[in-house]
Length: 217
Image (tube, rainbow, N blue to C red; front, side):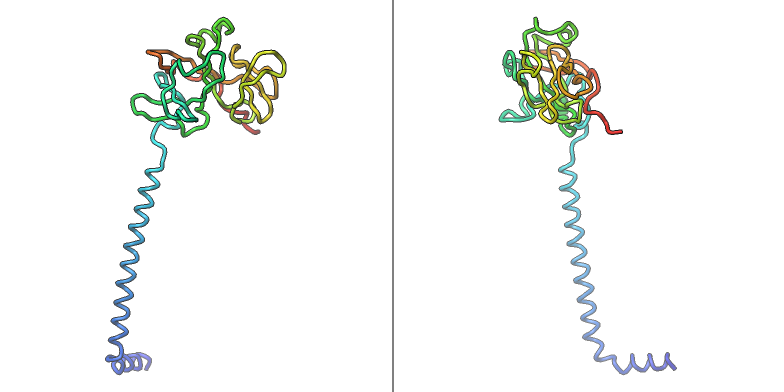
C-alpha cells in the first residue's frame, strides 16, 4: 500500500517536479563551485604556510665554519667584521649563518650570540685560547631562567664592566670564561670558539658548555 501510494504520488507530480529538479541541479553546481573555490583557497593557504616555514638548518646550533651576522639593529643580517667591534665593548648580538646555504640559524633563540672585543691581556688563559685578537663569543641566553643577556654595565661587585641579565641581575665576566660573578645564575655562559679570516669572524667549533637556562623539575 505504501509502495503504491509512493508510485502514484511520483507519477501525479511529474510535471511540477521539473523546476525542483532544476533547482537541485543548480544547488549541486553551486556546491561544486564553492568546493573548488575552498580547495583553491586552502591550497593557497598551505603554500603560504610553507613559504613562512623556517628553512632547514635554521634551528641547528652553530656549526664550524658558520659566519656571524648581526641579529638586530640597522645592520641586521649583515656580516660582522672585526672592525664592527669597538675595543672594550659593548658586545654585539649575532646569529650564526651557514655560508654555503645562506641560512641564518635564527629559528632558535638559543643560537643568539654575544660577541665582544677586549684587551687580550685581560683574558684568562682558557678564554684567550678560544679568542682571536681579543674577540670572544658567548651564548646570549642566561643560565638562570633563560632570559636574554642584554646589558653591558659596571659590576655590582667590582669595578669592571660585565654582561648582565636584567631579569634577575645575574652577572658574567667575559674575561674569565663568562663565569658568574653576581646573581642567581648557576653556571657560566656557554662559550663559542672563533676564527678570523680576511677581517670576517667565523665559528671555530661547537658551544663549550650548556646553552640555556635551568630546566624546571
